Image (tube, rainbow, N blue to C red; front, top):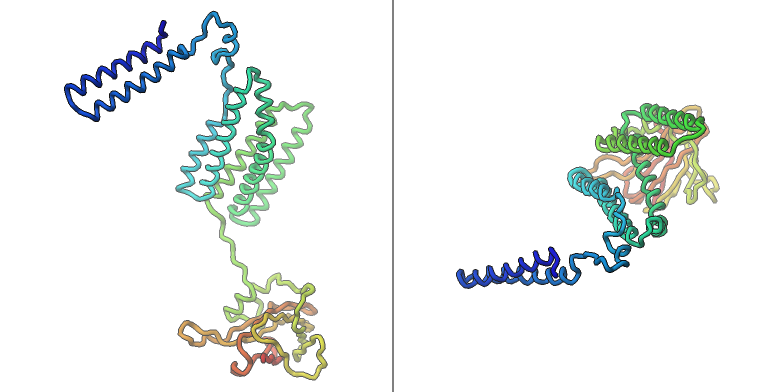
Length: 376
């Protein structure tokens, strides 16, 4: 005796075969006839399978099937992973029109949700015991899930903090915002600590709301953009702007006044208020000029022994534009050095002294002190 599903499929297969014959005789079209014959063969195959499994009906005489049949199994648990996969797909679509980081985040969410969904689906069919299925899932996924999820969460929190820090208008606003945040954390923690018993749901809700608020704030500032950060001047900037004089510049503010132990120092140059002197290993004090090798990075240390801040400056070979026209001397200098302090100056001479008009000279702006440099 055929089941209801088998009757429907057998009837459809027979109808498709009849329609193929009628269409082929009356219309004579090969394409339509082939299509109807293919439909008839496919329906016949499905009908044969359905007759074999008898619509997956369980016979009343098969007592073992009452426990092993699919209908006797517990329904699948509710899963959050389809929703996460949908959120990941939405994030990928958003990332295609915003920025690369959002797109990558969406791809990661989709992959993670897919893996979790597949493992959950497998574990729910591992046995008839829900407890055993949950244990099997935990044994398989926890060694991978917990470290990766922890690292990902930490990365998201750190990135959100960085966007907030860079998005606030000033450094003062950043300090105030983090003081308020720290005070809230201490306050909420103290409130929870004073309670004799705290429900797990309350803790999860508190941390969940805090995490969502942090991520949402970081996302807002990330999409808004970073604040404008003023570029700090360096000694290279003041040399380019021809400000290697005795006046204080932005590059001199909070400039380092000490030099750590350095290797390959060519000389230590000292200004005593009237002249520049130098000292180097093996120097006998009879030379009036400092000899420096060509095409080699050379470090010198400048020490100021006068009460007033002073800087050391030197004019290198003239710079040339694209038409080989001199743009003026290329000047290199230290920042202002306070009394008894030192700074490092790095040089590299590309031309010998004989090819440079007037040669190379160390000078102290605002004074008449000079020191000749000879480059062989």
